Image (tube, rainbow, N blue to C red; front, top):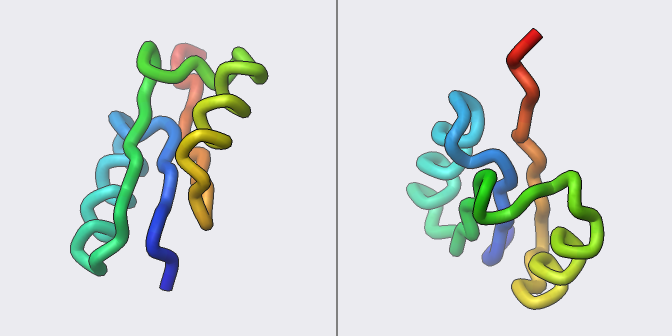
Amino acid sequence: MWQKVAVLGSAGQLGVELVARLRERGCEVAAWEKPELDITDAAATERALGELGPELVINSAAYNMV
C-alpha cells in the first residue's frame, strides 16, 4: 500500500470519500482543493507535487457547472 498520497479535488464527493478511505488504511494524505492548489496552473501543480513527493496522485477534481 502507498504511504504518501496526494488527492486533488479533495472537497468533492469522490475526493472526500477517497481521503477518508486512504486515511483509514494508514496512508499519509495530502488533500488539496481549489484555491489551495489550482490544477489549471501546471507550474504550481508540478511544484507542489515535487515538494511533497507522493507515491500516488489521484485527480478527483471535476468541473460540474455544465
